[in-house]
Length: 75
Ligand SMILES: [Zn+2]
Image (cartoon, rainbow, N blue to C red; front, top):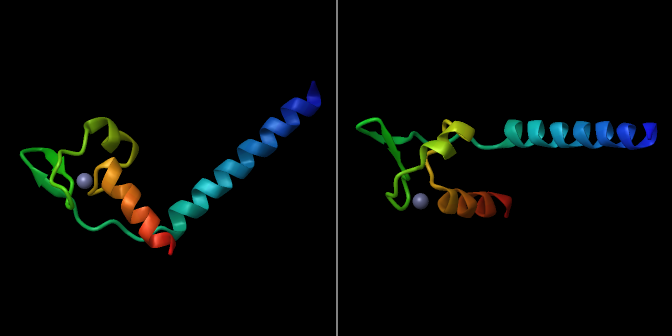
């Protein structure tokens, strides 16, 4: 039982460290396109959903375009 909890804590630490590293090494976002209080994706022009902005408040892209940029940055 204690082993399971220890393992869960270890995993949690690993995930936290990885998330922190990703955040620190990520390029800064370009400025957002904001009109009438809404944020529009700077690539495709779609509105970036408010739920997404709750998670990534500074992103200028919708989910699809951000995925593309993250793939591109990895190369
Ligand atoms: Zn987009």
